Image (tube, rainbow over all chains, first blue to last red; front, side, top):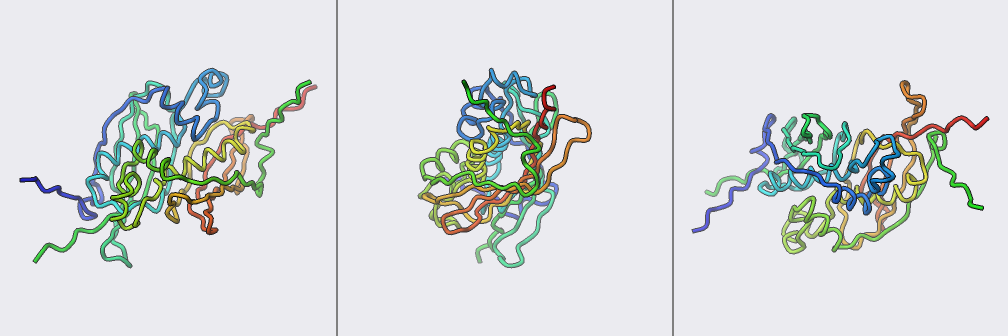
Length: 156
Length: 156
């Protein structure tokens, strides 16, 4: 017998729902790889040139930091849910530079939630997401909307 | 003789400054590659599974769309400027799904600009950025802050 997969719906993420999505180390290699493709500013893509900048060394592209967070959040939470995508982000703050070897922990909590007025099968969730480094500093904070399917009525 | 590179400073990006940063096609292969690493939701990473979702087929991760935009913006504008990084994004909207083969044009304009009150060598620029597809639809819009060095006083 196969254990049925219990999908989580909009109703399963009320305001206050909080979770940690894991911890990972960010390497210089992956920072440079991302930056060369998507954000080739010297302080993201070139360790030598980065030393001469205001940052004094290589820092991660903020878009890389956001993408790394998303990878952890999706694998930890969204893949087990009835996610229907996202219309966008309210606010995204890069608060502290992310440097090679930093160890980042991803955490989120639901700060708003409402059912759709036009689509009875859907609700919106607003999550506040934080990436925290090994010194306890919040390096990135974002508030994003997500669409989620509502739990279908139980079978008769 | 080498032509001196003319770096652009905060003063060179007044409110109203607008530019187009190029046009590019988004392929299914790169969409899947990004999604597998950073956003492995079925509608981003798996063309088969994507057909069964509300999107009816593969769509780009919104973080991929943002990263693709950034790559074009950096190469077109930021690399020739005295960019000092960004504290964040005010708003990021994914308005229309991006699908394989879409042809996206990147454009931006400066909507606010002010000098730093604490650092005489720095100013802030707020840019509004849009990615427009082959049908003329704005698929992504974002408003972001950027720090930029101010033009140094002319020599003697």
